[in-house]
Image (tube, rainbow, N blue to C red; front, side, top):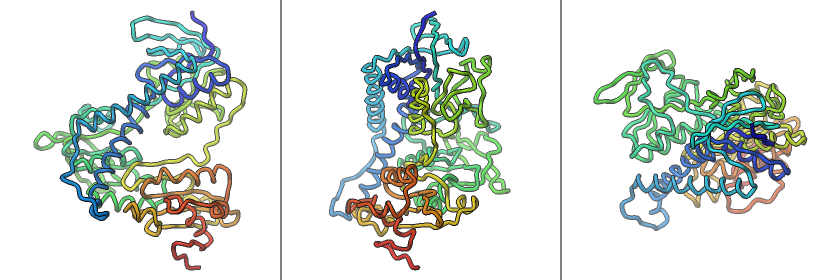
Length: 466
């Protein structure tokens, strides 16, 4: 038995952030990772897909070069070189994580962990050894894995996002099962790379976390980009179709219909806890199937913590970072409580979408006296300069107290200029305080300034009748 201070299972954003924070606080962590440092985000999620999204953005912008007096020759995509670029970006940042952990003298073990007791794990290392470690505290940051097929007739010939990245070329046609943020990003990428894309979403509309006025604008842009979207669609079965294609039979708002494609993409995720032996320990799970924790990231077993996507609550990197940091700080007695105010949701579609907090409809349902400020990007100088005038900023507030209840944006680089609003929500600032701050001109973030003024019908760059 080898004694360790703190053991962390999983080297994604929650795991490596926790290890670094523990080192900063004078504690030593041993991090166990069965695959590659960086987790899904760096290796098969946000980062590699953002490389592809940047490529299609460049391709799309090249088409408008003539508007600026710039002419190009024939444009196209060398998919092999694009894939190589994706791998280089991932490699740079995975090595960056490794270098940080080395700088903080964090021990990294390559292998698979299994719990023997709440304070002990066995690690089957990559070189065939079996090590047993005991830790004063353990953090489970194992992340998620692709969900298996759930539609009758799917015999695993459908692919997940990992397999999508390894395709030698974009598929001629693809059905994306799921209409969430990641799914729509992939749909945008693939349609710009020449694939015929169909999105099948079971809920009645796209992205229910985002205000419906905003998603309506996105839906129109997806249609312009020749992406077929079925909402309120329940897949019934998958079968072989003509000419080697796969056929998806589905019920769409009470009507049966079919669609075919050469590739079917599954986008569901499950907590990566099989093989950890948590059931024998009596670790509680939550309604989403992830590991249940309190606001301090501790499980029902004392000294055992969980953080990141393995909890299945807010599956995104910024929350994973925050939860990993909170777990680390609570281990040293700091009592860091997680607060999930203004958790951002975003997609790298064209145009991009980002939002946090309540939608206008949700705010009304909760009894707020709702007042809304809107500002169209068509009236923003930088959006016009960039040739990206499609979009809108929408701020949802409580009229009685001035509280910002939600912010929702569709437009170019939405996820980059929304942070000021997220900080305002977290700090309980009002639209008047955003409106009272100077904003660079021209800039996309000026749209938040105008939207904040529009709450009181005082926008400067758009007409808001009283």
